[in-house]
Length: 239
Image 1 (cartoon, rainbow, N blue to C red):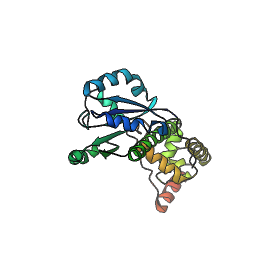
Image 2: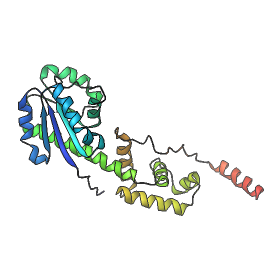
Image 3: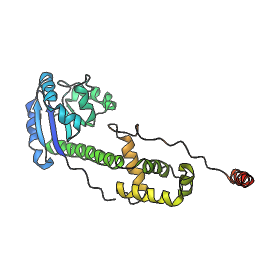
Image 4: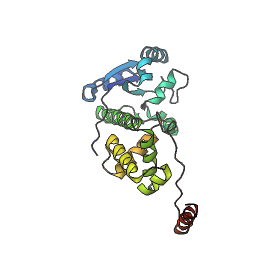
């Protein structure tokens, strides 16, 4: 499966009272092809968010925040700080704070790193955070380009239904089902049904833009042989 990842501008925000964290991350910025900003307090962070709100809300950038809990709480609240929850966040903390961080990992943190960290350690973590975010956005855009019928067909394909079953459920011909399947495979760059299933799972697990506003398909009832014969007899009697 050949997938071209979306190319976007990258930005890292380091929120930490210790400027050494920023200096270390700034040393690996070229290898990550990213810009790095720095704030040392909650007030500075609030001003930074206001200045960059347009980019954060428009999703024009791939953004990762590296923060110390002394500057930003692990689960930030408020309309402005809430924007940060839509992007990968990496917590950097001292060993004495690890227990709190571990208990809070379910809040959506991408990862946590204990201070002091090595440049290679933080570089690999940031590289993975950018890749996973950009991959999710790419998949999301591909599925958003599907038509309503292609989405309906996709939902049934990943549930394991055959072309005939899909045609009965959607009240279209098997030939039309094949056309929809070919289109959705092409648009998502999926080479096999397994590829499509993985891409579909990635799309659904994307907490920023899920399938909530897409049509849902009720389970397809598979008729057994006896039910099929009864239906055929009834159709003949009505003919």
